[in-house]
Image (cartoon, rainbow, N blue to C red; front, top):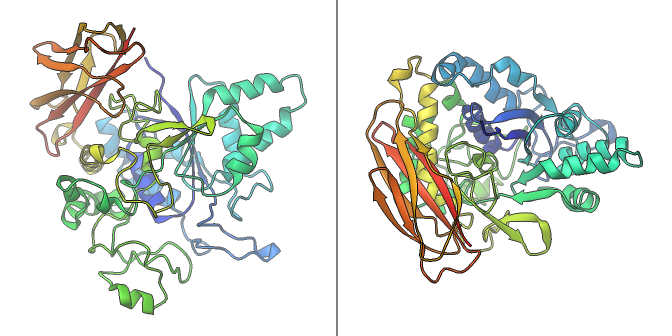
Length: 471
């Protein structure tokens, strides 16, 4: 059995972090969640009254924070979810993983916290496979955990062993750099640690600008209400435009999302900075951090195996200035000065991922397995990775199965984004054939995607990714 990715989540209280957290918990059957930790960023910190530092865009004292909101909603529907997949973790298990990390100030690493200690323990734990440390806000709590490890082991006879353990197994995935701790501490002191910047436009506040015309349906108030907002306790907590909610205590000049169909000039007159185009009440708002864990979902795209593969979590390319860093393909990160196109290659998957979310929300309110739709699987019957010769035709054997007995439509094609060569694909009764061009160069690769979409409601898709390397 292939290992399940272990995931650490550090997150600040941005409204899209709540939405991403709700989605993450709906996929917690696919992912080994090891920590859920509150952290700071340059956009949100709790402040330090004892030292005269006021909070910045932080929820009011005593208000339930977003991880707890999401876990509480999950607890309400757990009995239904577990009937659709027994791997869903019990709410009590998730609650044990919720800790407060370094939240006082942007880039705060001044002291170890319950959250940073949990991150440290996960990074050091005796467990197989990779650990993905996700920064939905700043990297400061992750940095503090690494500092604690360095403080404990640096200068001892175990330091080389511990350094190798951490750098060999740990991948930091982040939506850009939301503080300076990666640049100032992590990279200078852990130069071999892998960092993947997975920022994409398509999952954020500007999704309306980049998804296809066909897929804009999945952002509309009508679709969001029918498939998300009105679907049980988890859907009810999901933030949409004009929902009357807010992020922080007091006035927040950048948070006008809860207001119902406001006018730009009225907002500006009230002191708001209108940085994001206004959408109709009930419309998609943002889920910016969903790309950090979408790559771990076991849908067959193998997105987490290598950053260049691509999938629901986007695709990354090597950074020209850092041998251990990857960046979303052409993405502008947090800067919006460039053209708003989907530079993370995510928009092509947007509809499938949204329909999959809709199906899982329906699981949350549907006690009988037979009364909901479940994604088909592509069962691969030949090697996923193989060496081929230029001009060769190879068999790609697979079969699509659907757990609900739905009809399944098969499509097989070359993923041009991940490939450096091409192939002619033909579907057959037992799979497909791929014919590599006679002039394909040695070392070039062809990624063949098999896509199986069922006839259920909503239509769901499973995949397989074959990687052919020309020898």
